[in-house]
Length: 416
Image (cartoon, rainbow, N blue to C red; front, side, top):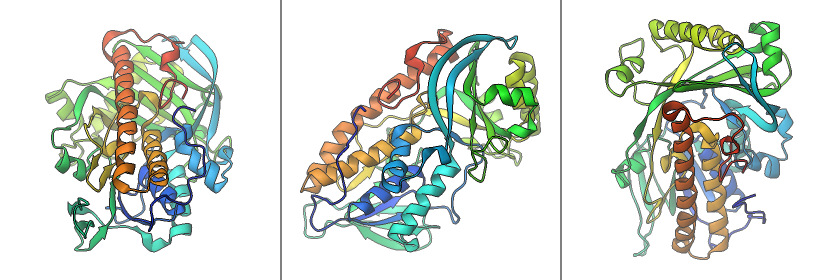
């Protein structure tokens, strides 16, 4: 596979091993933490949430970069934590099949993968190395020019820490990126993703049966929706226990229209997303009504059965740098690309694998970071360009063509 490091990365070219602080305990931070701990480094993950994380309704395309650590290092049977679909199917408005092709995807849920990675990190590094309730509020990077190269951190709970390397895996709203690269601001793409999930048992049996073996699309004017099966909240992949997950991209004008849909039940205008249960009743009703009016009946049934849909604003973020002295930006803390390649979690995991490889291959930290940055900037820019193009085809230009091979999911390129 493109860019894959197949050698054993345990052990490191850096002596002594590094003290590494990872800010952000989501999938990217956990993958990096597991890999770098395996390599012999002294790793601590700092998560701002006071409790273990959970994302309701978040299905993910389980690309190789995301699944690789669990498959290779933990020995996880991926069939235990993901669902294989073997078709890509498009429906006409009248619910007939517009296009169908054989293609295999793996789908899992954010919660399932998070739990497996967290269990692994805690089992190997220790529970005290995954520190909840630690929101980074200030930091200062060591620059390698003096005897004390430590990067210092201060957290909202009053705790302080130092490290040889700080990895910012703190997501699209990264405080580290905002301070180090303030010009790299989120650019609204012009649309949001409405999301939701429903137990397959809550759907008519014919609807559930039709959606079990495929990722199912409907594309219409300035919009498209995709539906696929994922594990349930306990991680079960057994038929009858699965969830059916939908992602529906809809355009909203920046300003009043976007402000309105992002204003929650409490009257608070959200920036990035409105979680399940917080979307106002009139917007939930509008989504259900529009689904009934515009979508094929099979897909409309999924939306209608979702009592608490939620939404995520689609943004592009592009950085010029990923390394600042002894600080590295990873995953969405650097590039945030539109979800159309199903590569958000894969990009973060790929950054982690590439960083582990660079630290293994170089005896000098600055050389390792420079090598890693050059390669991952290229990956991020290419992904951002491709996902912008894909989004524009459906949401703006109306040139999305079912069966187009460039629409296949993948991190480095379609299918990879």
